[in-house]
Length: 298
Image (tube, rainbow, N blue to C red; front, side, top):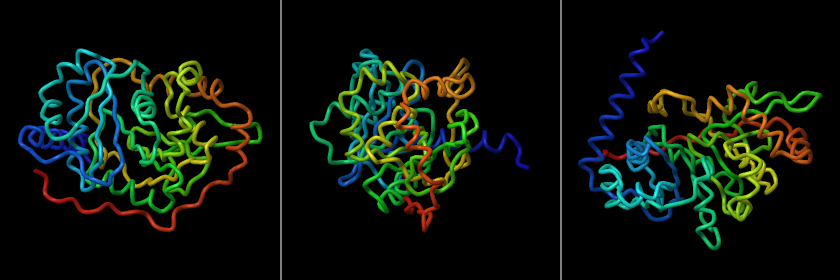
C-alpha cells in the first residue's frame, strides 16, 4: 500500500509544474478544429483557477476556444495575474449570471445562435492529465451523435424504481445509455443537439435542480436522445484534486446530504424515469481509447 504522502507529493509536483508553465509559457491555449471547453469558478477558487485551465492548455489536444465564466464582475474586470497570462495566450473570460454549477454550460448555450461544435465542460478543482481532452474525444468520435463523459454513475434500479443516488457506483467504460449519469467534473462532451435542447430552460433548472447540474443535464440528455458513453479510464492518480479549503462542498451537499435525490425527485418526471429503467445495462465499448502522446510542455 502506498504512503498517503505519495499522492500529496504528486499533487504538489503537478501544481508546481503548472505554476511554472503559467509563468513561462507563451504557447496558445487553443488550436483550430477542437471543441469549445468551458469552465466556471467563484469566490476564493478564482485565485487558483488558472491552474486547472493551464493543465488543459498543456494537453496534447487543445480546444478551439477556452472560456471561463464568472459571475463576479470585479474578477472579470481585474483578473488575477495567472489569468491575465492565460488571456494573452487565448483564454476568454466572460461575465454571467450566478446560476451555480450551471454556469459552466448555460451561458455558453445562450451565447451561440446555432450550435455546430460540441462543448466540453470541466470543474475548476482538478488538474487534468495531458491526454485528458484527446482521450475524451477519441471515444466521442465512435458515436459523435451522443454525449461522452470521462466519469459517470451507473443508475441502479429495482422492482420499486431507482435506488438512492449514493448507491449508484461509478461506471466503467460504457456505450451510450440512459443508465449512464455523467458526472461532469472530469470532462463531459455535450453535442450540438444537446446544446440546442438546453436552450431557454433557465427557469426550469433554477426551480428543479439549482445545485445539481449533472441531474439536470441527464434529464435533457435522455429527452434529446444524447445520453452519454463513458471513457471510464482515469482515476485519482491521473486527475488530481486541488484542495479547496474547509466547509461543505457541492459534492458533500448533493451526495452526502441527499441533495441529488431531492433534485432527482423534483426534476425527473415519471416518463424520464421509465426511459431510464427501460434501457438495458450498457455494454463496454469495443475498444478503450488511448490518449495521444503529448509533446514537451513549455
